Structures are given as C-alpha cells and as structure tokens.
Length: 178
Image (tube, rainbow, N blue to C red; front, side, top):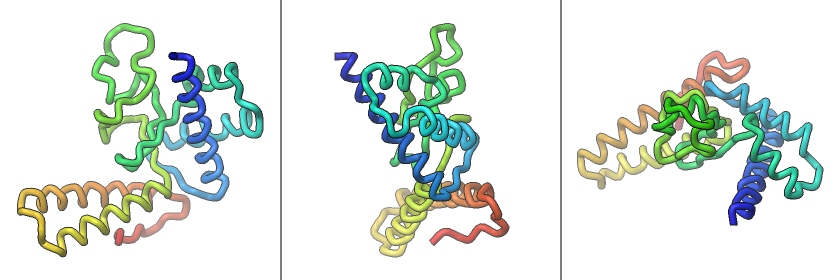
C-alpha cells in the first residue's frame, strides 16, 4: 500500500514540476523566499526527468530528492518548496529526528515560512479573491464581524500582491489589485 502512495506522490510531484517548468519557460515570475529553490527544482526536474518514462525507480528517486519537494496549495495561493528543517508548519522540527515531516501540513502554513514561493498564476487567483471579497462587501450581506475579518484578509492579500509585483523583473510601480 505504501508503495502505491509513494508512486502517487511521485506522479503528483512530477505533474507539479512539469507545470512549473512550463510556466517559467513561458515567462511567469516567481516571488517569495523560496523563489530560487522553486526555479531550481523546475530546472532540475526538466533536465533530469522531462520526456522520460517515470517508472518505480524514477518515481522513488523523485520522492527522495529533497530539492524537488514542491507542493502547490491553491487555497493558500502559494507553493511550498518543502524543507523539513525550516518548515514552520512542523511543530516538531526542532526535535532531534530524521528530517522532520516528509510533506508540508497545509493546515498549519505560516506566512513567515522560508519555504514559500508564489507565481504569477497564484497572484492572478489572489486578485480574483480580492474581487470576490469586494463584491461581498458591496453586497453588504455579511454581519459586521465577518465583514471586518474579510477586510483584514483583503489587506493581507493586497500586501502579498504588492510584494510579488515588487519582486518581478522590471517592476517599478505595482498597480492596485482589482
């Protein structure tokens, strides 16, 4: 059973890295503390595995390669370039053991984590989320506590977009999302 799960994890990693390589090749920007690791993982995967048959041995090597641990999190609008030693989502990372969690815990994702990168595609999704928040505020159907929390969330998401736009090549004056 674990062998099947490892194969599925390997196939998911291969899909994520293939898409990452294609988006980067098409000119998509990447920002965040782990942006260089994201680009390096996509390049390494492309150089080593692209266009080849991924059998059990290759999938195992992919899963075991610590440089290729890339996990998309569409709900958080980010990619985790998982490094067990720096992952803030692992509450036991400081305890002595063999490398910490093998995968990120998306329910415990921390905005200050060094493993985060964001792509233009994720920023586009963030912009759509801000439009959704603005539309909900305009409709005025949410009670005050929920509306206030959504406005705080909007401010946080806008800040993420500004930081991403500032890190883009040739970025001079990032525009207001909407």
